[in-house]
Length: 112
Length: 115
Figure (spheres, rainbow over the protein chains, first blue to last red):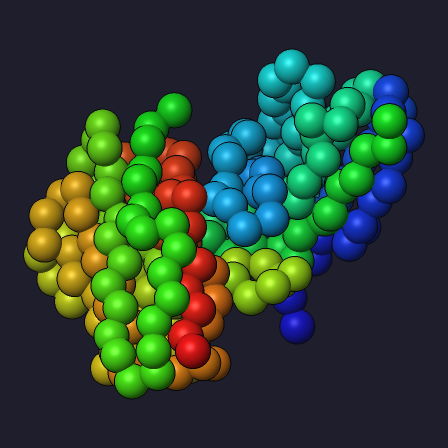
């Protein structure tokens, strides 16, 4: 079973609508990373969260980490076709190194 | 952001042959690099941690004699798939970091097809 649960597994949203992806861990995290991947390509770094209650935004994407550092959400406002792809959350459970455990991914499709 | 380059992007090889994949950090030194494997429509699975100047640390279930990792310099790690078989066909991707608690940057991945 996945150590990091990501939901939903897939998402179809109308262009201009908002969407939210969740990532949950049963254990406290040292760090939580969000990446975007297009099928068959590398991962594009989106955001890194390390502090409980932390929230970061970049353009139309906002990521939050809860106070217990066990749950994170990624929110996209007014989605565009360019937001389509696979979103992956990665958990760093240790202070040593950046060995990441990934969630199952969320496939996002934005309908024009 | 930092740039991690992976080469080749794709490779097709015959069963029984070996394939080497390179991972380079272009604009920073990476004492640690990571190798992941991704099957179609699945998430990334960590294979091993590549440490500069020392032996790699493999995850449980990953054959170290099958997947040879060498981290000869602070900017280069290589993964060699030895005696490749069709079941080794997959998407292999590496990552590198500047240091503890910093972002992990990923290469563009290598799609290996063994025929």
